[in-house]
Length: 86
Image (cartoon, rainbow, N blue to C red; front, side):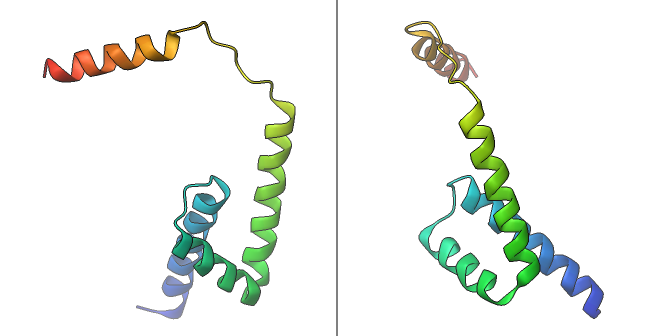
């Protein structure tokens, strides 16, 4: 494997980890791993800050959707019903 291929794979892995952290889906270990990486990598640090800023801006400008009472329960029931038929 050449250096360029390794760099592309490392960037892709970092981007995936970055998204997990921003989306709140990263484990504690993954969060720590990204934190350590960001201390050393300016490009990833800038990408993280930009992505975090965009995500927070979107969250602040979107009004929560008010769905009718019981809609979520109805959908979940239908999904379970359909899954049990298979």
